[in-house]
Image (cartoon, rainbow, N blue to C red; front, side, top):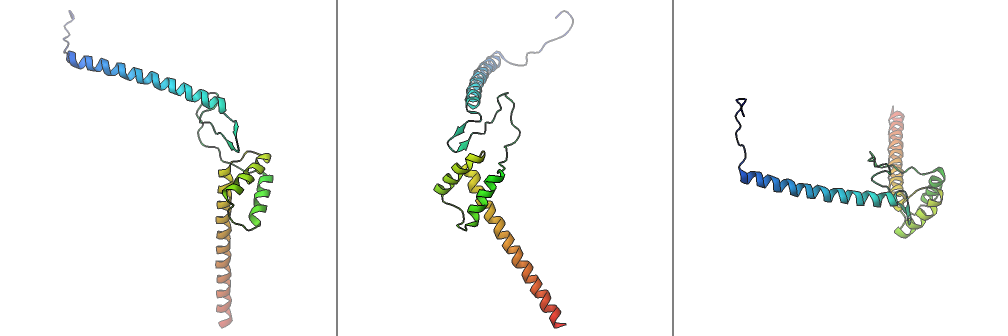
Length: 153
């Protein structure tokens, strides 16, 4: 302090002790979080890419420890698509849960797939089919209206 600088005490001794306790608790929490992260990462690495029944585990973290940016989208193989279209064309609507399990099991022979993929595919296909029918009906109605208008002239 011989250089002329003056120091002002910003915290009381009691506040300093509180801060030390808080830092100590924070450090303990951080250590627990690190241990939890290690345990979860080890578990994810051990099941990474493994089949669990008809479902596949999509790990949150790759084996290199890098975070995956986005969830991978399921794209059916041509054979899976052909089989799904065939089932849809039978006209029974969205299959039951049991039938979806069977379909997923059969399709898993031709590539990665889950029951959720099968269910969503049928829902999307049905929506697309309805949309096509609605568009076709609207177009035919427009053509009829145009034909009626021309015949009156």
